[in-house]
Amino acid sequence: MDSRRGLQLWGPVGRWVFLNWPRGSWQYDLICGAAIVALFFLPNPQAQTKSLDLDAVLVAIEAASDVLESFTADMTATEHIELFDDEETESGTVAFLKPAYIRREITDPALRTELIADESVIVYIPRIKQARIISLSGSSEEARDLDVPGMVSSSDLRASFSVTLEGISLDDGDGARLYMLHLVPKPDTSAARHFKRIGLSVAEGEWHPARRIVLEEHAGTTTTIVLTKVQRDAGLEPDDFRLDLPEDVEIIRQAAVDDA
Image 1 (cartoon, rainbow, N blue to C red):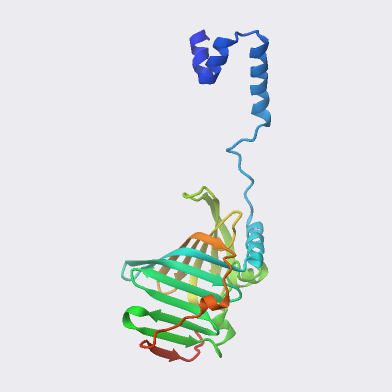
Image 2: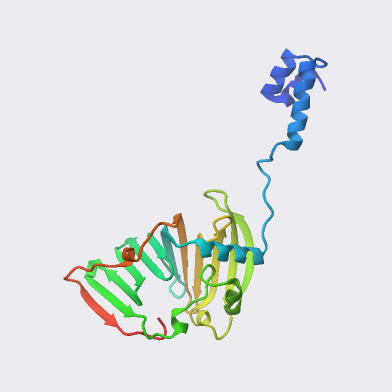
C-alpha cells in the first residue's frame, strides 16, 4: 500500500498523527496501542441488550403496572369501519388513575369529554349541550371487567387470551425497542364478546401503558390508539375526574346494562 492510500484510510486524525510522528517513533507506537485497546474495551454504541421472550415481557408489564399510580398522555384514535371502507381520526388527551378512573378529552375534530368515575360513565358533548350518564352499579362483573395487560396478572391474562409475541421493532421517534403482542380472546370470555383480536406495542423500559393499542371488533371495526408524551405518576387525584356540567346541559341518565 502506498503512503497516500494509507493516509486516506487513516482519516483526518490518523493523517495528522502519521505526518507529525513517523512510524517507529514512541509517540506513534503509543497512539496505535491506545487505539487497539479502545477497540476491545470501549462500549459499542450499536450494541443492544438481548431481546426478552413473551414470559419476560408479560412479567415486566405487570411489574410496571404495579408501581404506576396514574398517567396522562396525548392520544390519537383512528377508527376504521371495514363495511363502508371509512376511517375517522380524533385526537386529544387521556388520564388514568388507579383503581379505575379514566378521562378522555377529545379536542379534534370536535370537543367531547368521556369520563369513568364513581360507578358511572359520562359522555359530555358541549356542541349539542348534552351529557349521557350510564350507571355501572348493578351491571354484571363480566360486563365491567376486561382482562388486559397491565390491569391483571399474567396468569389471569392468559386465562382469557391466547397471547403471542408477534415481533420486535424500533420506534421511529426515539429508537426504543417495541414488543408487539397479539391477543386472541378465548371462547366464552368477556373479551370474546367484544373483540376479535387486540394488538399492543409496548416499549422496553416503559412497559405500561402501551404506546399503541389496536382493537379489532367482530363487526369489522378496528380502532387504533396511539399514546405519546406519556407522563407517568402524574399526581392525579379523584377530584381530577369530576365533571361540573353547565346548568343548561340536557342530562340523559341510563340504568346499568349487562354490556356496559
